[in-house]
Image (cartoon, rainbow, N blue to C red; front, side, top):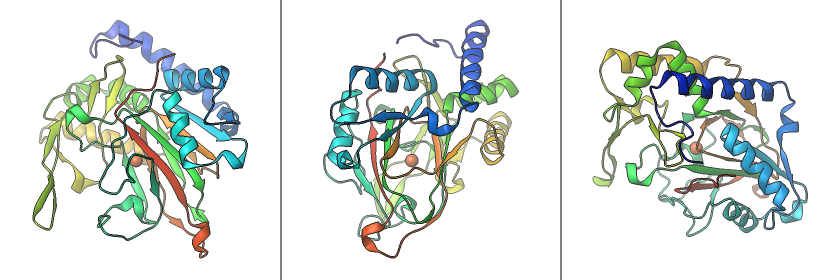
Length: 298
Ligand SMILES: [Fe+2]
């Protein structure tokens, strides 16, 4: 859907869009979270109704929670095929990704995963995926599927990044002006053994994507981002941190069970630390897809 929100600084457009988003998000909060899941009997062949429900959630809320109703369908390939039916095909495969398929995220120490927290049992702070990518290779959609949950912990925290935008803008529109600047943030180069794996990237936090929605690049890890050193930027970042670290009502906290997952437009997310089962066959296992594609419009 084009031009959903074409102008970052048009007050009238903003108010209308903002009220709709906040009303909708508030309505969702009145539900038990388990009632928000879309049940999927066959992920490789979505019914038109299931597909529509997923797209509706993604359109309105930027995320959709789903659960497989038959554990026999819970395979990595079926999850990949489900994503394909939603327009998600082109994966951003990173250093640790399996070739041409979803990435298995589990505790591991093998070569190439030298300091990647996602593959440890440590907490993972707030971020959007691929925030360090060049601007032409932004991650617009993510799929996270829980094949096996941790014994303890490993809870996901989720916040629609457009709600974060609203909270910032309602506090002070200058925060948005600062965070949409092309030099708002710089991600330092990734250097491994003296070799530049990824050059430094400078860009905005908020931008508009090709569908007229808001795209966000963010990491709460201090060492991951050098912020532009001026007052509006630093105040905006501090305000955002405060939202994310407080018990904001719009933050969803949920520990995915086996067969459950989320399809989203790269919303803000984090996970808590976890304790795994000793049995190697019961280790926490997630499948993740990071896509350059936008989720289909409904
Ligand atoms: Fe992530």
